[in-house]
Length: 223
Image (cartoon, rainbow, N blue to C red; front, side, top):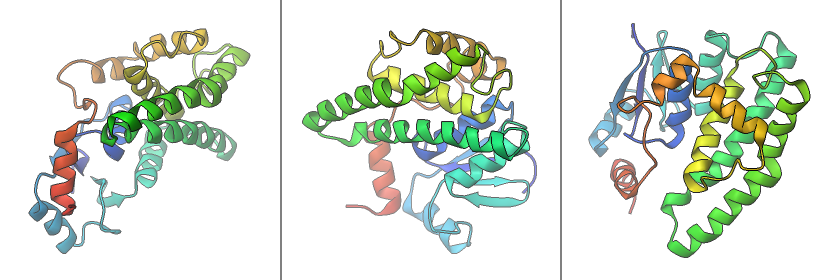
């Protein structure tokens, strides 16, 4: 295991997408192995590559890492996107967990029935506008600096721009009452590595659809 990190997952967002985002923001090129069949998954299991029998899995620096948070922690620390001390890491962790909570609500949306989607969209909008975005808006307003930790670009910023764009896919005007987040979004989309990742043809994945669900069901042998 040498060279570029290698990502094992489906050809879709899911839990791997934040890992793609973080690697891309850090300017790290990576390869992907897309799971399409049950046999691919079983080979990973039989070869002992999946510590807890699940993906995402990332081969990096001679390791086979599983568990999304462990992978993200490692990448962020390695590329100086995880603060300068334990206190800053704790703050980054809080900001990141907020975005993860919001994205978890969005991530299940495509699997729901039409009626369930209506209710889920209401929940997405309510949580985004009443619980999560007001926090990040206040942070940016209070310190008047470009990033959540002031002048320091971190993993928290990467997670937040991912969450903003995911939420806007469901509700395009979601930032209308958050001018500091609007400015943050504009700045982040001009960060060179992120700007490249947002271009057509990058390794960023489109919103999930029925095809992705069918693939996951096939790989995991779900009924």
